[in-house]
Image (tube, rainbow, N blue to C red; front, top):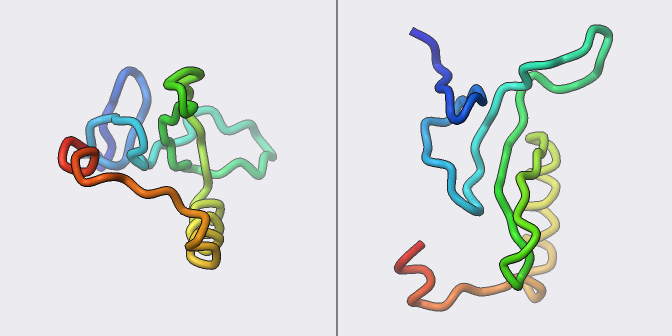
Length: 89
């Protein structure tokens, strides 16, 4: 049995429902020969503050670690979720 699932035609590693803001590991299914492309990426759906321009972004593990480090170093710039938003999330 494989460790991957198909979600709308995409091979995913994490068995999680696709939801805005959720980090889901996906397999790079089209790696060109002699490429330095990664075998997997982390996909996350995001949208602008006005709920427009929804899109899926791909990150490497290293890029996620870098973003986490940046957030840790700049806690004063982080946005906060209110209690009720956190309840329905």
